[in-house]
Image 1: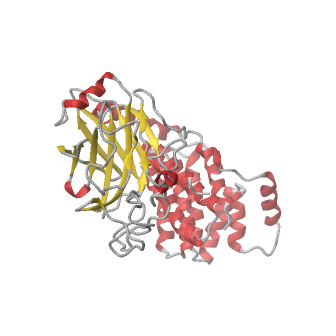
Image 2: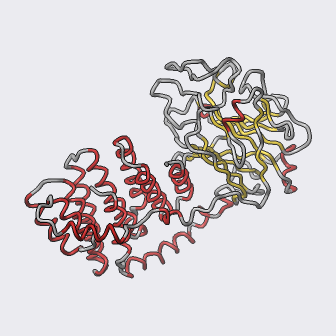
Image 3: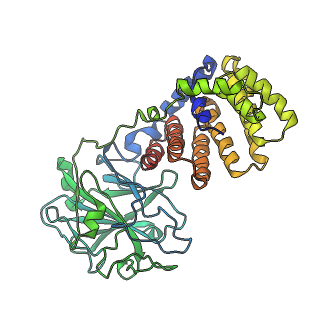
Length: 463
């Protein structure tokens, strides 16, 4: 199966026009969004975002040598920070238990069901004075930015269901609710705007540090061993190795350099009100190349051969956009061969037929398409073929109107599922990256920005 087949699906489906009747439903969708404005107004989701900072994916190993405990309970990515979001402080929020608050959120690479051993801390500097040490001795085994001593620290330890707030003397001064968005893999906290924290309302620059590690009842951060065991993390050079698995780093800061230094000092990130630090991802699909003229000519030439494998002949018809011929060919081939991949081709070709049909007929064809995909998967195909079937279905999900079929999120899951199957089988990295980009596009269609950005971040590190 040739990689370009799946890239070309984008062009093939985009060349045809979905009937206007499908898009009429956008009017009703818009109406419901307005009617339910309560759910989308920024004031009801924590306020307007004023800053977003992104951290590297798969860097949850401290300076590079730390290892998770060996037990399967400790799932990869649980400590991996991906994004830190700061919101505009809110005043007089009538729907909130705390009417005046400042929302912060942290997006993780993986939201494990077994995240009971994660500890996440957010250190804040927003006024004169403060501390450059941990709240108690021998916790993270680092010091904090000498230029920005911290004044308040929010500690997340999920089993409590609460966030503990510490002042710079190491005293717990408050306990507030912890909010979790498992779908978007986010921890959310709302700091009450009272006492010293009220000072941020003057619009000053604040400074933030975010770190993660494994929780320990005695020292807050689990001591490291040289070798990981079932319940203990490993990779420590000695007893002074920082117990931090991941930290928010931006610009020229290197996590490896910081945590491997003789006296590690955690830098703080400035958050300037009104300034959003966020990369533009609007052109990410342009990274996916289409077939070259030379490749298309090679397909045409191959189609003239008499000794082609039946599946390969159908594949070539499909890739060359000869959809009527391809549909007839695979329909006949289905009578002679029980290969589940035949159903995947038929699923895509059936969906493409919907383009020039009346609305009800078009909907029936799309539904038939998904029935064919389901039948293909039920045929117990080998792993690689299963991945290709998921990719076929993912592309159809990506192109049919989401307001009618609600397939964008399942489409994203299909692309990610295919990547998960193909990567261990040695599929080239560029193709795996493309699957992540298509998944991100599905999340964009579904208006799930956090999941889109999370998926783009994962795509970015695949090389």
